[in-house]
Image 1 (cartoon, rainbow, N blue to C red):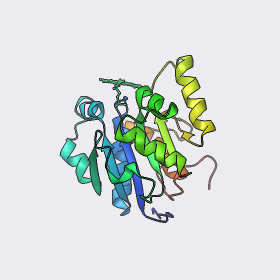
Image 2 (image 1 turned 135 degrees about the vertical axis):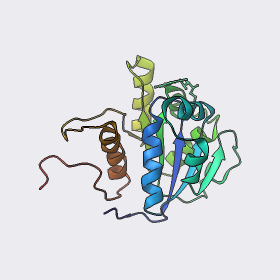
Image 3 (image 1 turned 180 degrees about the vertical axis):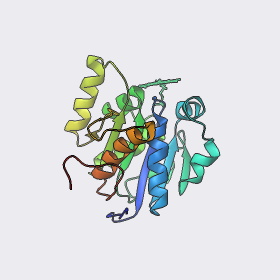
Length: 193
Ligand SMILES: Cc1cc2nc3c(=O)[nH]c(=O)nc-3n(C[C@H](O)[C@H](O)[C@H](O)COP(=O)(O)O)c2cc1C
């Protein structure tokens, strides 16, 4: 059973154009199923990756969120620190969006909302997906971790013996929910009876 432990029941989600959009869609499905309101921003390259990497439609993905914003809408509610929420997750997080946030460039709604989440000392979870990583990528991640962000790379674990892609995806999504302090049973924990 999934029991939310959030205050506002509101989570901001950014989908950027890295590979691994399946993780973001699964996170949305879970949050939707437990009635947590999601404020979703989908970048243009994330929209393309939904079509390239999944059999889901953009309409289906949007149907899972409470509010959907275009990434250029810098006047959206989530652009302001006065919008209260329980945290923001960027999943997957491209190296481009990561760089924008790390360097305070704030050129898109995803990076602006992330920047605001940091300045308001709220939880910011970034799920980068790139390999191998350059020194620039690593330095940007260190900057963000120093500033309070949680870097949660899309690195699958195998100790729970996944048999399907869905089980690999659920492990990563479960790790995100752990950070959001939302109880779940998406994967079997190590030596947990
Ligand atoms: C099929 C596809 C896969 C991509 N995978 C990655 C990736 O895994 N990591 C990454 O950092 N960028 C990846 N990119 C590049 C980003 O989409 C590109 O840098 C884009 O400018 C990101 O913009 P956004 O962060 O505003 O979505 C990929 C692009 C395509 C088309």
